[in-house]
Image (cartoon, rainbow, N blue to C red; front, side, top):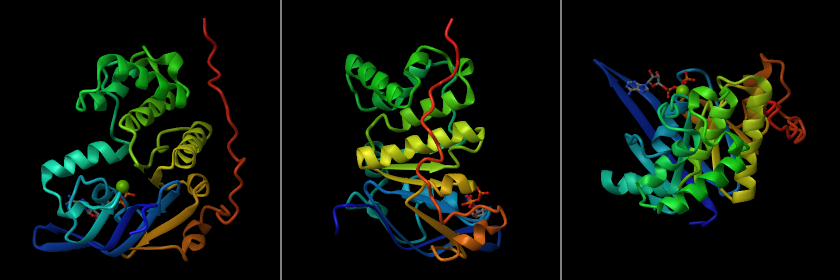
Length: 258
Ligand SMILES: Nc1ncnc2c1ncn2[C@@H]1O[C@H](COP(=O)(O)OP(=O)(O)OP(=O)(O)O)[C@@H](O)[C@H]1O
Ligand SMILES: [Mg+2]
């Protein structure tokens, strides 16, 4: 297999049993994402976007099909090997994954490293670097409730990157954020794909987010397609074909220290 491919899904099926009904969510989904690539997945509510991310992240198992992450067919792993694989290869940024309220920003970032027995001093140093990378190192010792929504998202992003994952999975990462802050987070995610050679896959409802991506895929009828994107976004009046890289400028935190 091409070693540049970080994630590959082949003929993926996921069905749920709901009482006597069977809900067929994914029906032969194929996907390949390279390292260094930033891919956006869009689709109607209930089309299976979160289901797909959960499968790629090893949090759920498919009814049929293969998922290969970093050359390992994860569908064949037992639970223990699966969590090991997840810990070393996958970072997740899901909207409902809140920071732990009793820990400061820098402590939250260190949580994933605790499992890996990274030495305390090294752990701290890495956490500071990650907070620097996402632009909130000046708030390292603040508690989550003392941070703005955008800052909390940045800390969560730093935490998702704590174990240096090859694959970063994001589910509506900018859902709660205002337009400007959301744009900054997306730009960070894109830089993380490019600069650090990660595969970044984000689910979004937001056309502005989607058009920052290298590729936009639409999940429809259980399959990923790239032809119908224009149709999907037409209602929002956004031209997703043009993807100016300068739509979101680098902006520093404007809060005044005092
Ligand atoms: N554990 C489950 N048991 C039963 N049905 C499920 C389960 N998880 C998801 N589903 C069903 O699968 C379908 C897809 O759900 P999913 O959460 O993947 O959608 P989504 O595309 O992420 O939607 P949204 O944009 O609203 O977040 C829905 O019909 C949902 O009810
Ligand atoms: Mg969802």
